[in-house]
Each structure stands twice: as structure tokens, then as C-alpha cells.
Length: 203
Figure 1 (cartoon, rainbow, N blue to C red):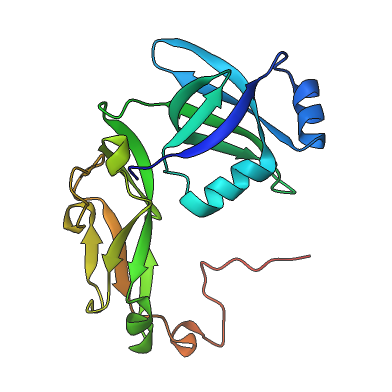
Figure 2: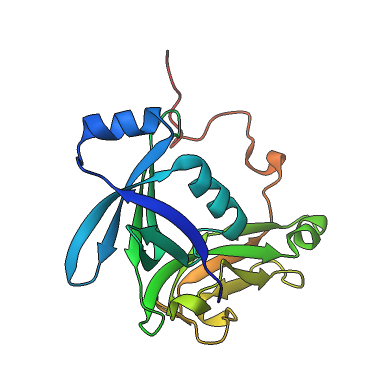
């Protein structure tokens, strides 16, 4: 994460829903750049270039935003999608300093899940992302958790996870990330008569 991917962006003259809709029609994504102690800047970026960079580098990468001849170091703070078509509606960047600590949610990547499932067990994952803090250049794209040798009822908490150098969790150490469970057999719960507490649905 020491290198930066460059994205050319432009200022938006109008920041309203009508102009945003028009921008999306011609291949742009409306967005903004949040700046500490300053007003945010309304911008637009070419959708194709943005998606290509995100696909190659990931969301936690440090981007070099070129705006009117200036270079701005920033990360993607939020991406907003339409609920039905899942179309990218807008992107929010956060200006950063390489010497100031930031907070991010980092994706959890499981290692050895196949080994657990081979033994007829399941990984019950309660956290897909872990909140962490550290310098921007130290924030990883994901955090690996090896579940290869875990057995039934074993748990992994935040405090059990190995973090990259310079990175700390930004959440309580006893929060459970995942648990290894034994799947219920179909016949265990099946009874000829429904349970008294079970409500039957009527059409």
C-alpha cells in the first residue's frame, strides 16, 4: 500500500439529484471528498476508471486524486448503491495524511474452511469485517483467520486474531468473530406433530 493509484476527478458545479442523474447517464459517478476541518468538495469521476481501480487495488487502497492540478491523498470512505439494481449511485472519498491514524472496517478472509467442512462441521461467522485503526499505508485489504485446526465449539474472538504490524482492533477484545458448530441433522428436530410453540402459517 505504499504506492498510489491515480484517479482524475473534476469538480461538480451543481450538487443535486437532477445533475447527479445526468452525470450517471454519461458515465460519471457523483461524489465528494471529505476533509478534516474543511468543507467537503463535490466531485465527479468516470465510472469505468473508478471501477477498474477498485477492482485492481481494493477499497482500502490509497488513491491519488488529481483535481485541478492538485494531488489529494484519499481513501474510499463509502460507496452508495441503488437498492434494486445495485447501481453505483455515488462515492465518498476521505482525504488522509500518511502520518495520521485512521479507522477502517477490514474484511475477514478465512483460511482452511474446507478442512472444517470436510469434518462435517460449520463455521458460524458472526463478523464479516473487523474495525481497525492504524496509519493509512498499513491498513490491509483483508485480515486472514486460519480455522484449519479448529474443532466443534471452538471460538475466535477479536483478541485471538493476528493483526499486521502497526494495526490494532478498534473494538472490544472479547467480541466473537466466529464459532465452529456441528450442523443439526434433519431428523433431530422433525416430529410427527408440530411443536406447541410453532405457529403454522395460513394462506
